[in-house]
Length: 570
Ligand code: 5AD
Ligand code: SF4
Image 1 (cartoon, rainbow, N blue to C red):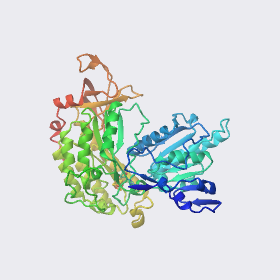
Image 2: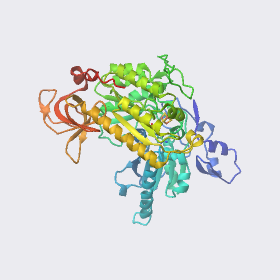
Image 3: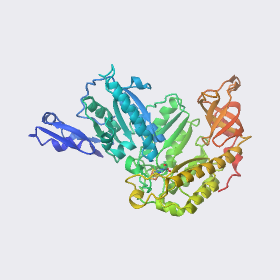
Image 4: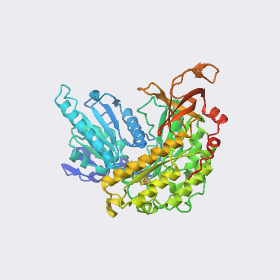
C-alpha cells in the first residue's frame, strides 16, 4: 500500500507562477513560496511503501537533514489519561530521541513542553486546561527572564489535540504545536516549524499507522512493568464515546513486531507486560494466514460494524507473547464482551504467566441503557458470559468500567447497574459519571438529562457498593498465600509494595527471606515472592513475607484456581 505524504506540495507544484501561496488547511498549515516549490520534491517523494519495513520513518522532503535547530531542545513530558497514552509518550520520546532531542524532568531546564492529553470526559480535559494555565505563565516568565533567547514551546499531543485541532491554538494562545495520535512521526518537522515562530498542526488520522517499526523508549526505565499497544483506534462507536473520533479506525499491529518488542523488554528486565487495545479481542494481524474460524459472535451479542475476516487472532498473539518468557507476567486490556472467544480463555487457562484477571467493561447493568449506548449486548448476555468465564477459569478475577447517569438513565435502570455489580463481584472497577462529548452519537441523538447532582449521587453509590463488595472479596484472601511481584517501596511507610495476580496491591515489611539458592536475602523490585495475606482493605492487602520464588515454581506448588473454585457467584 502506498501512502500520500503531503498533498499540499503535490497540489501546489504546477502553480509555478505564483509568487507566494499561503494556504490554510484545517489539518496542516504550511506557507509555500515559489522558491520552495521550485526546489520541491517530485511525485515519488510523496509516496512511501507502508509495507516496506526497511523504512524507519517517512522521509520528510521539506525538513532538510541538516536542519539547524536554533535552540537547545530539552523536552519535559506531561502525561494524562490512559495506559495507551503512557505507551504513546514512549513512542513520541523514541521518535524525538532519534532526532537528537534531550529529555528533562526539571521544568526549569525545559524548552519544550509536550502534553499527552485525554478527551474522554470533560473532567480529564479540565485538568489539562489547568496545566496549560501554568505553562502559559511559565512561558511568559521565560520570555522576560535572562534566558529569553530560549523561548518555551508548548505542544499538545493525543486525543484532546485531535478533538479540538487548531481551536486549541486559537483558544490557548500559548500553544505552538498540535499533533493527533497518528502524527507523531511528524513531530520533528512540526517542532522545527516553531523555531521560525510558526504554529504547526497535524491531526491527520491514518488507516494503517501502528508505529510498528518504532521501538518505544520508556520514560520510566526503572519500572518492572511495561505497556505494548497491539492495536490502535476503535470501530465500535459506542454512542457515548469520543475515542473512535480521536483515535480513528481500528487497526492491528503485526504480531512479529509485537513479539520482537516483548523480547527486547524481557532483555531490559521487564517482568510484567500489559497488551493494550480498545478491544483486544478484535485483534487481527491481516498479514498472517487465518488460523481460526471464529468470526461468529456468541448468542446475545451483536456488532454495529462489519467485522474484518481472516488473519492471526488475539488468542494466537497471546500464545506467542506468553511463550517468550514463562517468568514474565502478561496482562491485557480491554476486552469488549461481544467478541470474547473461548480460544482466549483456553490460552489463559494453559499459561501460568497470563494473569487470571479479565477486564470486561459492562458500562451499565440495564439492557435498555446498554441499547442506548449501542454496546451490542443485554444484561442477561453479559451475565451469561461472566458466568462462562468464571466456570472456564476457576478463580478468575473480573474487572469492569461502569458509567452512571447516561442520557435518560432512570433510578430503576441505575439500580440494575448496582445489582449487576453485586452479582458479578468485581475485583477491580473503574466507575465514571457520564460526560457528554461533542461529535458522539449520544450528543446528536439524546439529551444529557440526568442532573449533575443525581450523577454525583449515583457515582457515590456505585463507589460505596464497589468498596464494600471488594472488601468482602479481599477478606476471603486472608490466610491464602499469594504470588507477589515486587514493585518498590512506599516512601511514606517504608513498606514493600507489590501486586498479586489480580493486580491488587499487597504491602509487607522488608525482611531477609529464603532465596532459591538456599541462602537468605532481602527483596528488590522485579522479585517474585510468596506472601501470606494477614489483613485486607478494599484496595490493599497486607501480609507476611515468606520466601523468594519464581512464577513457574510458585504455580507448581499452588494452583490459583483450586484455592478459589468455590467462588462462582454470579
Ligand atoms: N463519559 C463517562 N465515561 C466515559 N467513558 C467513555 N466515554 C465516557 C463518557 N463520555 C468510560 C467508559 C470507558 C472508559 C475508558 O471510559 O467506561 O470504558
Ligand atoms: Fe469507546 Fe466503545 Fe470503543 Fe471502548 S469500545 S473505546 S467505549 S467506542
